[in-house]
Image (cartoon, rainbow, N blue to C red; front, top):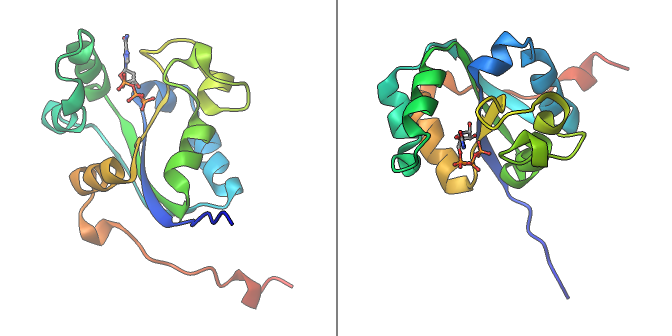
Length: 155
Ligand code: RTP
């Protein structure tokens, strides 16, 4: 017998400045909503270099690190927290590969992107990094627990 245990978890998503400037916020939010995921935190901000250096600290040795931090710090970005079953892995399937040119049509990067340095969106790559990133970008009282009551008034 094979059992797959599906665990409800959280995913940190950031719409990068190119995604905001391209007018893709709505379509990105819709793709997570229509899959069935739940939005529990959202804000627009101009991120400081400090928060971006912490966010991308694993990339500090990469040649593109400075350019990346400098670009995203121009802002604004949309930071979000999404909740649902298997969301880290499924979120990657919704987003596509790091390079938009390697991303399947139907993914966000595959449908809307051309350049790795303008790849529209960030999503956490593991449950552990999602928790780290959520703690970095959000305060506890900025995450909203809510229930769907629409069956009480949609017939
Ligand atoms: P992601 O989760 O965003 O797909 O990216 P990743 O962590 O798989 O890829 P990583 O190599 O960690 O890159 C993180 C972000 O850095 C930018 N980047 N620029 N050659 C370049 O100019 C370059 N390579 C990566 C991208 O914005 C990427 O999302």
